[in-house]
Length: 305
Image (tube, rainbow, N blue to C red; front, top):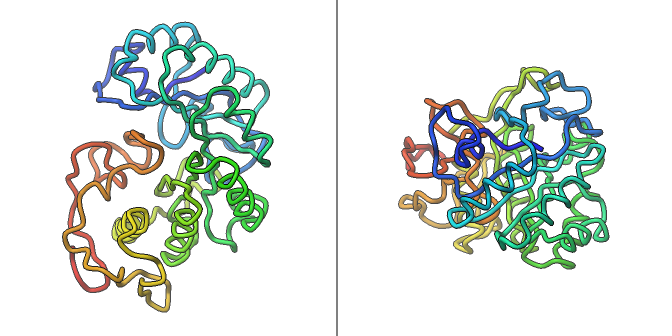
């Protein structure tokens, strides 16, 4: 199995690099997915090294060594996240790991591709507290091309999961894959109405993937979407009260957001999710801040906030 480099450094399984205050430990099971998402390092036809997921390196370790390290630091760990690639034996290995850490009683999340309530129940039965079922592409036009399948089918699955497992489902949405800000805001609103948490990502072009030359979203656009997610999830406003340009850009939220709190720009998703440097290189402005916010002003319509 693998750990994100930041998690491995926190657990002192590697000795080099900065040691960040990792509230969540990120694990990965399996490699080279049987699906072929155009943006993913683990996609079936991707030429990105198998040790990569997004732009993060995930070194391999013996499961027993990881479990021992987690036992050593378990009082400092708030959550363990399982990234489960749709490949042979990944589920079996993930269930084995969950069994080994069960007595530590650390909340666990699993990000996994499922197609039914029955499949999801298997993960909950094996000890997962929250299940992450990624949507990624929120544009009905681009979903088939970039992810494969049908967005309407995915939304129906999420609605079914939200009813079967209320307040226990997370989904991922990637900004910058052809959707408008309006489409993203409407998706976030729908998920909120279903009590599904949205983990918001910025598209990251990765060498070796089909979208390696696709541009990142602008920081200004991503900040507007982050504000939309914050005001919707905190019931400060609703997308029906938003205003958009003809091109779908957000120009008003129905409330004054001039003093929006800085936590609106932190990494979103399951409780205590941080994902350091998942979307960007160290040294540049972060799309998702994982600790203290040092953001630049961003533009909403023709106002700077």
